[in-house]
Image 1: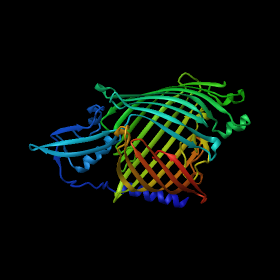
Image 2 (image 1 turned 30 degrees about the vertical axis):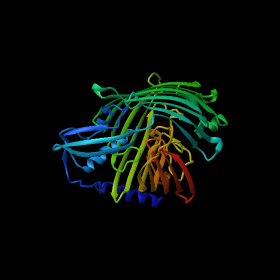
Image 3 (image 1 turned 60 degrees about the horizontal axis):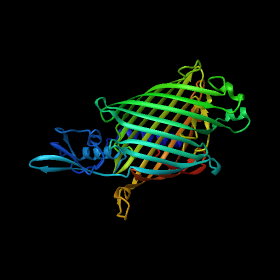
Image 4 (image 1 turned 90 degrees about the vertical axis):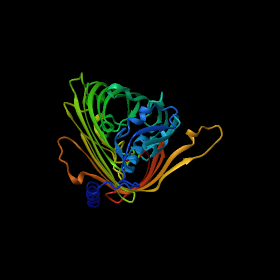
Amino acid sequence: MKIVLFLCLVFVSIIYAQENRIVANSESNYFQVDSIQIIGNEKTENFIILRELSFTIGDTVNNKMLHFNRERIFSLGIFTKVNITIEKYKEKNIVSILIEESWYIFPVPFVNVREKSLEQTSYGVSLKFKNIRGRNETIRATISLGYDPFFSLEYENPLIISAFDLNMFFSFAYGKSVNKSEILESIYGETFDFNSMSLNTMWGKRFGEKTNLFLIFSYSKIKVPSNKLNSFMSSGSSIDEKISTGISYLYDSRNLKQYASNGEVFELSYSYNGLLNSNNFNAINLDMRKYREIYNSFIVKGRFTARHTFGKFVPIYDYSMLGYDYYVRGNRYELREGNNRILANLELSYPILSEWNFAIELPILPNSLTRARISIIAGLFADAGTIFNNTDRIRINNFNTGYGFGLTFLLLPYSSFRIEYALNEFGKGEVLFATGISF
């Protein structure tokens, strides 16, 4: 425990003490931008790319700024390659953005082993249709079988009203979820499933390329199988119907969102749950992250996230959890529940393979299906997290901790996965397989 906390303090000190030292050729040479041209976008509208840039015509830029903007464009997740260069033409500086578009309809299979048991494994496929109409809209349909089976449908539009720079997100989900609460299981006498349905919509206003403000509205219906659990439901019956509303603020200055080496994230959200119910409650979520390249491609990154629930009645199925979507590596399968959650993660990473633009020519298949940006990154990490109720004091000895090492494999813009080995505070180890990046 003391070792992990010491590592956390060291990493945090490095993150805030070091200046951003991303290496770029001729950083000190500035150029005035006289023109911007985009090449290679057969489908994508120009404004989808231009709105990600931190500069416009008339501004001055250097190679470091161009590298940052290249990564911001790649973060859109619809290109297999992005290059930005400055070309001279009749004493004019032309910023040339060369892109290669990815294939836009593809299935993404997944397997999620939740509790060290094949019987508690989710598996399925998510079908994505990206960049609809060339405006970076996304439709995603997901079918998950096995443990916690569900069906979901999502639609995302990053620019639904261009005059006001408004975006929107909509989702529908229906399925069964295994009860995660040990308290409810002891009351019911055995494991059981919740039947659930939810509708969510989020409307956002973007302020520049880094800041968003969102309004959130949602409806959910949750059913338990027995009247024995009614006292733990907001309605006092076996069915809860809940209308929620909330607001969220997001600041995101990361260069490459799929695996950042520089930038910050600050996200704060508040939701009021049970708008038409007498038993209502509130939830506050905080997520802070910082990324820095400190020396010769070594990257230090840190995250602090917390959730706080309070109000007249917080149903157990809305408690904060550790051991599922949020967990301490080394204690991946230790389940904890309560009103509040705190989780901190710190990592030091180094790219074994920084960037390989994979390309192969195959008959019949379009080039957009045989191109990808591949990276392999090794890392050391330290995690600490705890769950506590509103009547509890936060105690250091109640934190779960873990540390270890791992490899992250990026196959961009399509997917990523990682393999990690972690030790908990008692020295017990575990091997972890997961899709996506840690944070």
